[in-house]
Length: 390
Image (cartoon, rainbow, N blue to C red; front, side):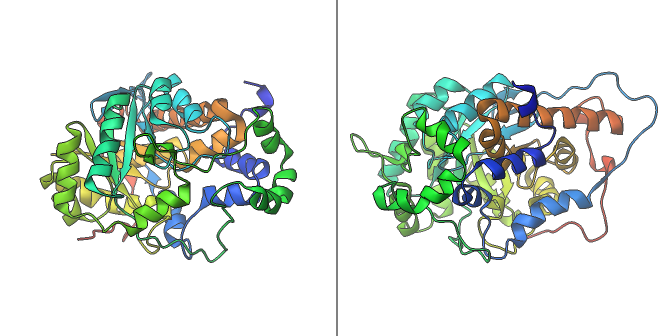
């Protein structure tokens, strides 16, 4: 890695991504819905939590490795599935390779820009993320394709209310890059020549299609075509969740749980893992930060399923705080994308290295020799911090 392209924190990666990406692409990456209160609270809540340090007798080495959904991972971070990754020509494949090089698993969105087969080849520890979209036959075909490709786990994301309006304005995202769309986006792209050149030298432009949503023998639908199908599909029932679990027949995570009663129903439906998530603030604005809701969910079902946290993680100490409050691991979405935008695969590896180093240094500071020793005693929780829903 070129020395001057290395960055020391996720915040630096975000700033570099903002300087490199066209305005619409960066704004799509940041996303958030309505006022952005949930998106902001996901991050702010971690800053409210303190740590309880020790000054002597600290362990000379720390154990960071764990397992999630049957997969050994070198430290408790998994790359969260995110949609069309037009921030870099290599997209999801670059992220998968980076995750594999650091010994962690990666989620792959149904709305990814690269086929599941290519991503699994880059990282055998791939969890395929499924939306309830189309008929049961459509969903079953996607599940079977993921199985045939070699995915080792399934993630079903159900927390979506389609509240996409943003007070700061939504970015322009065309259905396809035709001449009209190219002309409209040209000033933004020209203003970011490094990003534009990264595509031009490959002889391609961003593909706004989602190959993993294609039917047998059919071309990849556009992002908005698949999105339209998803919006028009009646919401799933708990029987539908149980059907997905039974159809997959393997490690299965339900993502988007934030209520205790939903967590209990998910366990009854047969899931093996739960992600306490609010879709990164891209869903129903006003939902509390995930780390505020995590302990109640972990206490209710953590002895029966694995509980992970997704939302607001920007540093290794955030990972430690989440694990101290009941998470087995965390999932990170925006941070790897900022790394990808800043420096391709090396940038994603850089982000993962920053998180791993932060976990290790925090463990040392609080006198813990393993991530498995963490408890609520390791964090300083202000009065009124927690939220219990349901």
